[in-house]
Length: 380
Image (cartoon, rainbow, N blue to C red; front, side, top):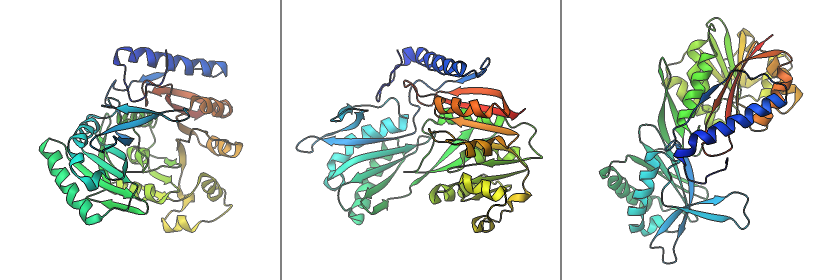
C-alpha cells in the first residue's frame, strides 16, 4: 500500500501508511542484528502539516489564468501535476494559493515571466511568498504592486510578506525572515527562519524531535554539548538550557548568522558557534591544528567537557570510519536520521562501543516511504 502521494493526503488510511513504514524499518534493524524491542512513534497531523513548499506556475496561452504545479519524480519528459489545493501544506499556504489566483492576475508586471512561487509559513498563520522571475525586476514597480496585494490579502485575513527573485536580484518588499515557535513540555523556543534556507518542513515532527532530544539530556547540567552542522540552530537553541555549555558548528554563513540571532532571541548565554567542519572539529580537539575561527568566536575548545554529541547527518550518513570514530568518542550520542539504511549501517559500527537506549520514529513526510528516526546511544 505504501506509496508517495504527490500533493495529496489520504487521512482515512494514514494509520496504515505509518504502520507499514515502521514495520519496514523495524525489519531492517532486525536483519542487521540490531535490538529494537521498544520504540516511540510520533505521528504527524494528517493534513496541513508542511510549513514550506515550492511550486512551478503554469499559465494558459493568453496568461489569463495559471495553476500551481509539481512534477512526478523520475519521469521523462517530466509529468506535470496541476494542483487546485495543497492539503499537505499549512492552512496559510492553501489560503495564499487561493488569494494569489484571485488577485495576482490583475497585475501584468507581477505575472509577466513568473515561473515559480515559494512559500514559508509558521504556526501563527504568517507567511512569506517568494515570486521567481525569468526577467529583471523593476524594484519600484514591484514594491508598489506588492503593497496593493498585501492590503488585499490582509483584508481577507492573511498576513503575508513578499520577495521578488530573479537572476542576481533579490528584492525584499518587507523581510525574508519569519519567526517560528517551538513548543515543548516545559517551555517555548523562538526561531528565526530565512526564506530559501533550510528549515524543518513539518513543524509538528520538528517539535517531537526536539522533545525527544530534550528527554535524552537528563542530568547534563555539569557537562557540555557539541552539535555538528547545526544549521540555524534549532537543536542548539532548544537544548542549551540543559547543559553547562554548548558549542555548535556550521560551515555556511547564512545559517550561522541566523543561529546567532536565534541564540540572542532566546536569551541564551552559555552557547557559542564556530564555522568549522566535522573534520576540523576533530583536528582542533586532537591538537592537530589551531583555527583562527575558534579564536574569533572566543572559543577555547579545551575548556569544554564534551559529554554529549548531537548529529543530524545528511542522507548519506556518517560516511566513513573517521566520522564514526569521532562520533564514538562521546559518552552520549543523539543521532537524528533521515535515512534508515545509512542509520542502520552507522549503528552496526557504533554499537560496538555504545548501547541503544532509546529509539523514536517521526513521521516527517506522511504518505511517503520516508521516516525520520531518533536514537540515543550511551557508551558501554
